Length: 375
Image (cartoon, rainbow, N blue to C red; front, top):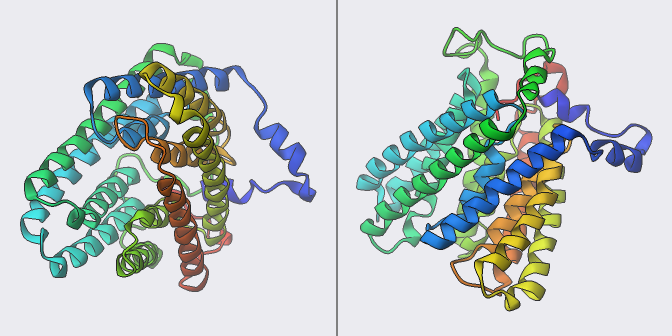
């Protein structure tokens, strides 16, 4: 899918016409946006009523799992739950050896992230490898901020709950309300030559012969660990979104990675602006879940409309949701702290800069190689 990102740039700098075309309403887009908004609203009500932690993760997973067809959404949801389950088990086992021992934890993070990024390239179902590597590495990165092993275990299990029930809600809503005709387009869409592996095998054809797979994993690992070491060294853990950014925007093609980074910046700015407006002007007047639901539904509708568009702009919609949710959902009571908004945006920008430099100067892969996008 990297080629899609490279073809996304407007011709002759006609940005207005390009945006008008990309944001044009369709019946399928309206239905998918309504499904996403409904899923987020249900997650907010359930998490707030039952006080389920990690609401930002839960709400974002609705966007992450939602796909253009029932089949793809179901596969993504099941794959996500399987991947997170495996990752949580590995995380808890690793914590037996790494908790309180940074000399073991940091190498463990590095190895887990490298293996996850490598598996995301060589497995036919690459996202499972990505989820396992990312969840293990990220959970290890925040381990030292948790004061006791018991809280570590509880936190990891709550993450599993937050992701799993969001996946279940998203899949069920798509099965109930997404028209069956939506399954036809993805199944009959022409596939780029060489972009799809044989579905009867576990690994892609060049899994163990193409050095680009190892190079890609090394670049992502280096960028993410560099950001981690920097924000830990300056004692600014609030910009941990730099670590997340390095893993999520990486594509096989250098040009595609930079374009995806641009989408992430745009989405981050819009989502951060919506969150800033909400925290400053709306949050002080919120007293019930109902008022929060109305605001979240409005922001989710904006993010969902962009996210359900073509792959040329859909990633920006995910980032609008990411920035908004991670800035607004700071607990189970209204919070007007603006530091989180600032830290999230700074972290994303820092991660973009580091990833762009790494992919530009270290083993750059240009569009002529015809790479495959795995996430």
